Amino acid sequence: MADQMYEKVNFFRSYFSIATEKKIVLAEFVKRFSNPSESRVSVLDLGCHDGMLINKLLNEVCSSLKKGVSITAVDPSFSAIQEFSKRSFKEYGAKLSLHNLSAEDYFEKHKSTKQFDWVIASHCLYWSKDLQKTVKDIVESGKKGLIVLRGSYGIYQIQKQFKHLIGNPDEQLYEADNIEDCLIALSAKHNRQDFQTSIEMPSYNQKEFIWLLSFFLQTTEEKLDPESISKIAKYLVKLGNPLRHDVSFFWFES
Figure (spheres, rainbow, N blue to C red):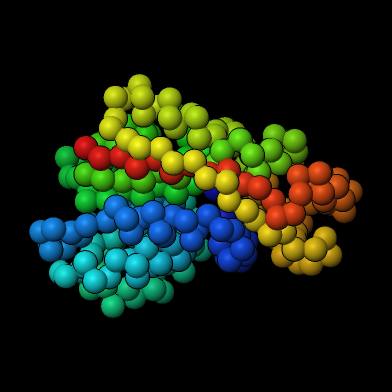
């Protein structure tokens, strides 16, 4: 179930603008992307949010999209899907299919023998009740793909420390090793990359600081009282600024 936090696009944009992780995923995606047949490329983007990431990824490989791209975009946030729909992607010759669903619900309703050229699942599996099944569905749906999940340093530490403040009751506190376990159990051919990324935290009295705390804890500004904000701020001082945030990329292919 999507919490109100997911309807606030500014939270995601704040994170996207300051986290070094996004630059890394772009560089690594370019290394692995190819389109030897020069056919229309099909992409399943799970947890697409407002389309900023897939837009940047396509921009990096646009010269290979000779006959365009078909994007199936999936996200549980209605406002995010609305924002996605405002992007034309015309420069990539894109055909769009938008779904206001979680990854699990998408597979439940649209499971088929179709394989996408690429499946991208970036930070969208933290709430899966059956992680093994969801990872299996993802792997089986893509000729190639990428799963991104956090490591045990950074946002994961904040969530564990302040678990009582997490606004989403479906949060499972998964981290990268859980994805590795699933892929091994599936005997899925994959390559894991671990990175230490950083998040430059705004000062305590800035609005973006509260936005980021809300993002980390999947809640809303209104639900974070001054005392809780102060405790989190003191905890963040111990973790340092910029905040070290580990993230793992799992590249797989069928």
